[in-house]
Amino acid sequence: MRLVLLGAPGAGKGTQAKKLIDKYGIPQISTGDILRKNVADGTPLGKEAKVIMDAGGLVSDKIVLGLIEDRLKQSDCKKGFILDGFPRNTAQAQSLDGILKNLGMPIDSALSVDVPKDDLMKRLTGRRTCKGCQQMYNVYFSAPKKDGTCDKCGGALFQRDDDKEETIKKRLDVYEAQTAPLFDYYGKKGILKSVMGVGSIDEIFSKVCKILGS
Ligand code: AMP
Image 1 (cartoon, rainbow, N blue to C red):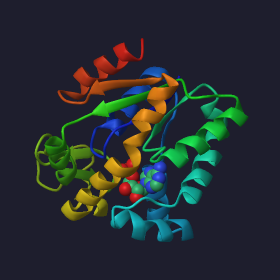
Image 2 (image 1 turned 90 degrees about the vertical axis):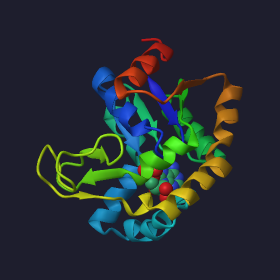
Image 3 (image 1 turned 30 degrees about the horizontal axis):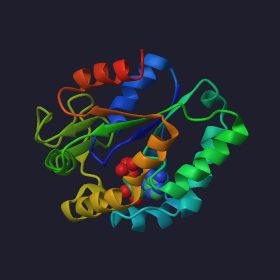
Image 4 (image 1 turned 180 degrees about the horizontal axis):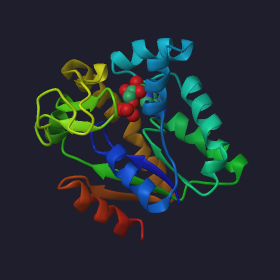
């Protein structure tokens, strides 16, 4: 399976991707995660990206395409992959098609996870991540037992800089303007599918599996 996950920030693409990894044994490739790792490691690329990420904008296509091409060439992608948060605009989608054509492994589905805007705001502003084990919580829907502390490892929970309210508004605007045209892009190729991303994680996942034909 070679899958692109589409959907607004907070739609739950990452959560569904993690369940797909377990089911299919293929890697999830999240450009957001790769960029955040660079930020945490203080690499030159991370320093450049952080300013843009904190403002809710898109990191340059050149940077992101370089990261993606390197990752897709790794051997674990031969059996398939799930792209999460990439592509984010039409130029990235076109470049991705070029890279995958050269590698002989084109995308077979683009799955859109659809969530109403009000829900997205709560999901994003409420999101907290453990510094220790990266476990995710939401103060509205899945709060930890003890405020600010991870149930699993006792680590401190933090809010991503780009999950602050103002940045979220910007990210959602950028999504509408730049990423939403990808529905058309993949629709025209005849590989676009969509799922309502509301309900429990497991309910959504069972719909995802049905739609993907498994
Ligand atoms: P995400 O976790 O996917 O929402 O990504 C967090 C932030 O990383 C985004 O708001 C962008 O600033 C940046 N980012 C992630 N993926 C991309 C991409 N494909 N193109 C440009 N910027 C990206």
